[in-house]
Length: 172
Image (cartoon, rainbow, N blue to C red; front, side):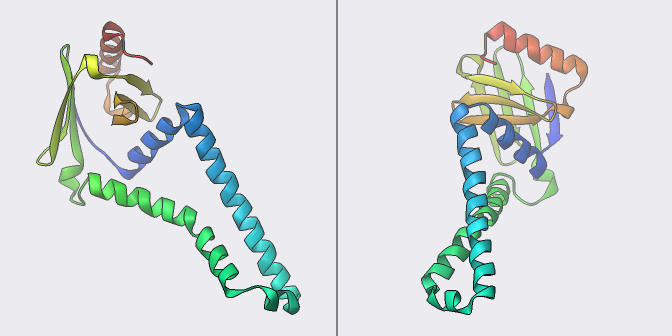
């Protein structure tokens, strides 16, 4: 079965989201990032409001403290920027190079981007498989995966892929 489909930034984000949900440690890290960002924004907001009301309080806060709060408040924005940068590094900006192909056959899985790269993976090297309504992940290592938008599969192709996964004993 051969599939050709364009890969978008939203597909990449959906793949990372599904990847982070598959492990308890990755879930905890994601929650910790959210909670720490919330705490940082809350403290920063408190300090700004307190400084606006009480000028004596504002004069006691050093410039280093302000710089620390501002730099910590930029971390979520930097994370978003880093994701976009990763996607641009994997897929160059031209629209034709974002079209990827995937071939699932009895012997191996082939994936590639024309003119950029191609990978061939035997079924024995496939570690895990995950799928939801948005994205399909095929893990070639514990933390390295191929992602295919689930909408790229027809109903018969999804059944065929499920049969291949079951036949080769890939962990779900």
